[in-house]
Length: 218
Image (cartoon, rainbow, N blue to C red; front, side):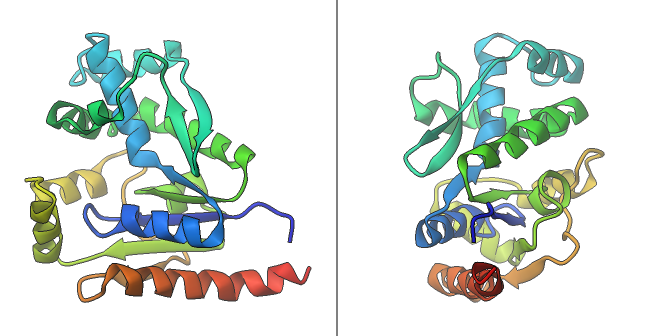
């Protein structure tokens, strides 16, 4: 098999997307793409440049002039902004709140879709997000949708020291006009509430390997 493969892992907040995407990418030797980090990078850029993240028109215009680069760092494809030195800057409450605002802007979703599709130039990918299997790479045969009960997801967030209102976040993600969060056609839905990370990643890996086996013979 010499064709590049894109594995889409979508799902609700705190459903286990990030952890499982990293495990699956490492197990397969694929590159990992955290699309949420790409939105946080844009939010950081807007805040850093004094662009009002609550003004959709201003945020949309910022994408027109923004010139970040995609680069492979370790086993990740990342959006690189040269004046962003410390990755911890992307994890501040201000940037996290800003990313939720910029992510609902239709022009931003279109810009990100193009940039995320460009990630495939580097090789096979495990890409996590909320619209990978429905909007970014809808043609992929490897689609997974993770979810868990609201109680379980809140517990995970709390254990990580984060106090999100997940019910509000779910509503924002599923009701936004541009590329809303939804179960993609043909996606395998996995409820992670009663599963360990290892159990979840194994379910995904078993399914991927079963699909890859016939392709490797071509």
